[in-house]
Image (cartoon, rainbow, N blue to C red):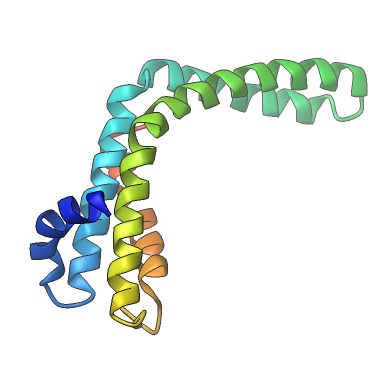
Length: 147
């Protein structure tokens, strides 16, 4: 495939590192890029405001648990804010989705050609990627104050 011929020379040197370091490095780089794109492609001030408003609506809904009509009104407002929040969050996904698909496909082919070995602690490459990227993403989001 054409993208494999592009990714082989780019990713090849990283994959020459021993397991699991090669996968952890790729996971770190991809997660850092995605997190930075998220920070700069979303309106962080708006995201913070929307999050605070949604939290306020959740408190109100708890207060109105005995009044279903008022609770539904507050829930409707919360859903509107949640939709705005989700639309903001979707922007970076549009920029990262296609490249990530190519990279994951390349990684799957790479590890399939190796016979799908256990990369670390008896886990395959996809689980190591997911676990490590979650840890890196949470850390970077906290450090960079991303909402």
